[in-house]
Amino acid sequence: MIGTLLINRYELLEKIGEGGMGTVYKAKCHLLNRFVAVKILKKELSNDEEYASRFKREATSIAKLSHPNIVNVHDVGADNNINFIVMEYINGKTLKQVIKENGKLNFEDTIDIVLQIAKALECAHKNNIIHRDIKPDNIMITDDKMVKVMDFGIAKVADAGTMTNSKNIMGTVHYFSPEQAKGNFVDFRTDIYSLGIVMYEMVTGKVPYDAESAITIAMMHIHEPVIPPKEIIADIPENINQVILRAMQKEPIKRYQTAREMAEILSVIKKNPNYKVILNNVLNDATKIRGTAIVSDIRNDFTTVMSQEEVSQKTIYKKDIGVVPVNEKANKNKKMMIIVAAIILILIVGALGKFLSKGTSTSTQAPIVKTTVPKADEKLSVTQKLAVDEKKFVPLLTGRTQDIAKKIVVDNGFLLGIVSNNYSNSIAKGLVISQSPVVNTSYEKGSKINLVISQGKKIIQVTQPQLKVGKYENKSKVIHEKRSKSNHSKD
Image (cartoon, rainbow, N blue to C red; front, top):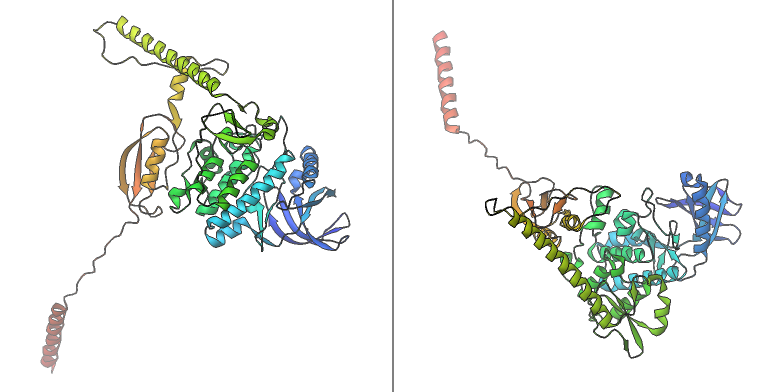
């Protein structure tokens, strides 16, 4: 492709990058006599007419974005079945390169970079554009520490039908949101989750979820609780630790609801490093406080303080949140508790009656609720639902320390079973070699998970045999004397 002249204007000079969607070239715009970056869509994608037309339509929408932290898109076009996007050329490094060179970033730089990314996302989201592939490789850092978010190649113009296709899930697995991994409906909050992972990697030097296969990593996003960054790097400030954990909540409703909200918290921390961020923030008065309205989520304790004007703008989440008086919320909670208590009471009475009807001569064991797997079109009974709820996927524990593995086990509702030790040539001392049951096994809550901890490489001591020099000297002497006598006898 080097040397190709697109639409008689953009000359491709050198290849500077490649991704899942296409290849990026440094090019020269002969019309304006300047360097640009040209992204060429992969041939197999260009041959798909539906995809190519959607790519052009969405790329045109992205070209309308104008923000100092977003790489400008100058042009979108096609030439001889080559679909391309022309962007501003940036002199700098990707955030991925910066992390690799430094191991991890200091907290001041982390806040400054993430704050700029959040502002870029705020601009995109206001224009109804979801990036869907926020990762360090798609973030450029200039020499003067200016952040430029790029590669909106798989971005999506948000609408009521915004959904990733489970057969063709878009994005990068290490930075997936759980809803992307499931192939479910996605909205702006999927970018918030990915940004949380990027921030995690910046302060710890590694991604929160990693495994040999992409499917395993995707399952970890869905089921496995994240290890708090502070447990990996002890000196991470608690407020940064809490911001990351909030952004990475598996349920979108528990994350920051907008990029602006996250940016505002980061701005406060930047000005006041000692500012306390509380993950479960509960305000007692959900009416009005000094001209502000409290927007509270009924299903959890996260609370956002917003201005009166902002309340009307939060229509995209109107099904999830709303201004709820405390007494109304309390009434809903009471009703829910009554329903749950009634179900439990019915189950206890039913089980007790069944037990008593069999008489005291029968086994003293408590009755077991036997459930069958329902067909796709059947509804679960109450007992079946309870039985299903009693099972959970086993989290990945290999490669963790024993303390962290134990915490993950307990946090997932299981118990730590037998912990044994063994030698390993590949797993470092003190880390989990294997687990039983294995990861992603459907397992009953309260059951025990066994671990094998590495003792490191087995050191085999080799003892060298000692040579008895005197013995061999004497034997040599005897041989010499025999030869000497033999020679004399011949003479």
